Image (cartoon, rainbow, N blue to C red; front, side, top):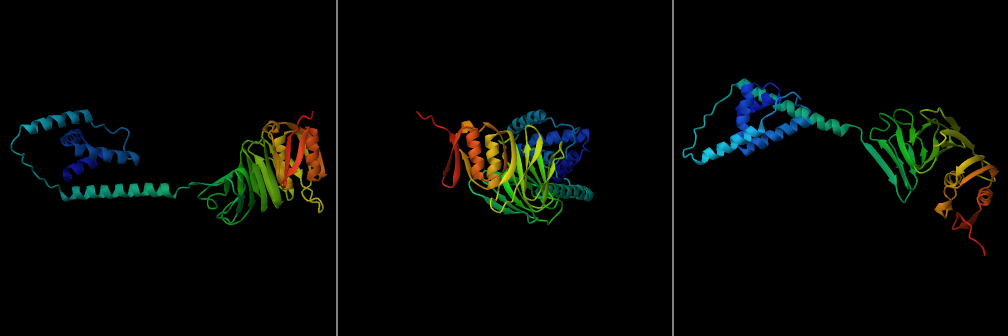
Length: 334
C-alpha cells in the first residue's frame, strides 16, 4: 500500500477526511478487489474497537464497484501500460501515520488485556460423585451430588459471593477481603461463624441452613431473616416467604434428634430436611407421593419414630433396605 494511500486512510478513520479525500478513497477502492478487501478489514477492526464515529460519512461501495468494472473493461483495450508516478510524502506525514499505527496497536492490546483480566464466572459441579474444593480464601466446599456452585475469578479479592444450586457444606476460611455470602435462590446466607451446610435444590419449596459451628445470618432482600446459631437448622419457605428455626437437640444418646413443626409441608421437602438433620438416606419409592402434604410435630424423637409417624399419618409403607429407609404406597391386600 502506497504511503499516500496510507495517509488518506488515516485521515478517513481519524474523522478528518475532506470531500476531496472521500472521492480519492472511492477511486482507490474501485481499482482492485484487494483494495476493497483491505478497506473492509480495516473498517471491521475499527468498528470492533469502537473507533468509528456514528456520523462518519459512508463510502459509496456501489459506485466504487461500477468504477472498478469500467476500469477492467478499459484495460482490455489498452496496449501500453500506464506510467506510474511515485511521489514521496514529506517526512512529517510518514511519522504521523506511524504514530497513528502505534496508537492503534496499543488500543487493541489494551482492549484484549482488559477482556482477559476482567472477572470471569467459574462453575464447579458435582454429578455422580461428591466434590471438594478449597477456594482462594481457604474456604473448604464439599459439594453434594447433582449440585453446583458458581463464583467469580476475583473471589476473595473483590468479594466472597458463591451461588449455590443443590447442597453443600462450607468450612469457612478467613483470608482475602469481605465476609462469605452464599446466594441460594432468593435467600442470602452470610457467614458469622465457621462451619455450616446449605440445601437449596431448585425444585424444592424449602431452603435449609444447618450450622455446626458459629453463626450465620439467613435472610432475603425483603425479609431481615434470622440468626442461626450452632447446632440449629433454619428453614425458608419459598411460597410463604417465611423463616423458621428447627433447633437441633444434641442428645448424647439420640444424636440428631430434633424439634420441628411441619405445617402442610410437601413430603419431598420434609424428607429433605429430615435426611439432612439425621444424616440418613431416605427414599420415596413413588413419585405420586412426593407432593402429599404433612402436618406434624416432633420433639426429640429418634429418626425411626419420626418416619413411622409420617408413614402412619400418610398411610404409607416404611421399609429399611440396604442402609436406607424406603417410603412407598401401600399395596392393596385382598
